[in-house]
Image: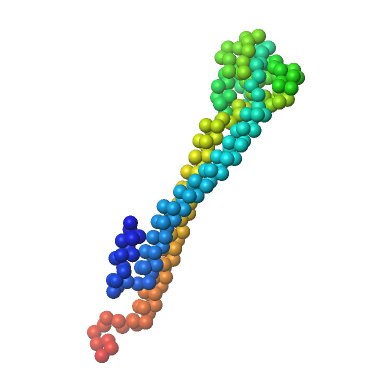
Amino acid sequence: MRALSGLWRWRHNPLRRATDMAEAWVALVALVLIAVAAPVTGCLVGAAAQDSLQRSARQQQHARHLVTATVVRDLGGTLPEADPDTTSAREAHSRVLANWTAPDGTAQHGPVLSDLRSPHGGEHFGLWTDPHGRITTRPLDSATATTHAVLAGFGAALLTAALVETGRRLTVWRLVRRRYARWDQAWDRAGPDWGKAGTGC
């Protein structure tokens, strides 16, 4: 609104300078870009992220399998390679030695994180593996993928708006510097005796 009022105010003002109109036009263009380009960019980035993340989620759900593991004995502590950002790691309570059968039928054995609070030999728990029985994380689900896509789109819109506003501020700064330079030139032309009594008589 300030951009529109600035253009209207300077429209027929006799004190109007070229830089005043340029500054008002820059503000108007920036306002339009923030109102239109930022949301459009956010939607495009969000849609692209949604497509990519949903494809990744489908691939993970196809390639990762939930198998049943059997506790051999409690090892205590946590595995150092556990990813704290995954749901399976957050739910893990104990480190155990376990046996499980891979989706391809091979027998597997090794230390893993379980969601059992007090594991005992012979207890069962779920374990995510790849087709060959190697431990992996829970596959990305559709809802989480959508959330990440929305956040990506929102971030892209904010970044676009920030870039436009930065461009507007830089342009206005250059216009103001040019205005001050012209004022300095005008003062230099007026001479050091400007304003003194009898000057120019």
